[in-house]
Image (cartoon, rainbow, N blue to C red; front, side, top):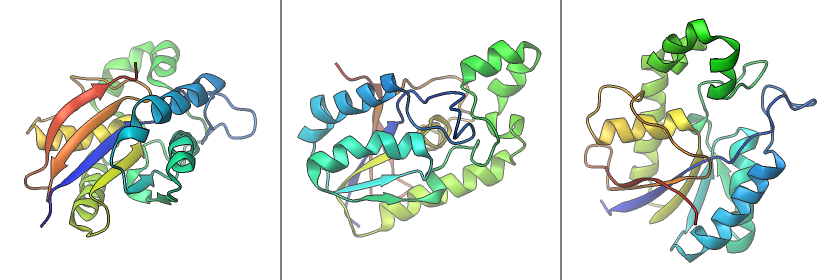
Length: 195
């Protein structure tokens, strides 16, 4: 199998408490600016031949500027979604900490469990999705627009970490993963920020 490069991009800043889409918000104006800067200053120079995204608006919006620049259609993949998929109201970690300080440690220990999702089922689904991307013959360098937990799940797997609570990812950061399968995927960089 050929070695692939996955450029894992955490979405830009969402429009929290969006009046029309509170559970699946689009990007905030600042998030749109982040996504454009990421595409123009960093990703357009990469040898990207495939773009995939979580089906959630904040990830699709982040992928859109790069897709336009490269003329590549964005493929939506359900397994790249965040563990908050289907919730009535998106809340950033900062909002959760402010609104429920007594549950902050619970959130840090397991965001999926905090949101009522089985953490092992979430992890298995995310890893199966990344395994399929690595096994697919299409694409040598794939831009993957996703969320904190799916990206941290793959990083933790590659680095043989037991959990994801020990690090965070910035909006529109890039994490580079290299490998030909889930068994040999490894992190080259984590949380690169756009200059």
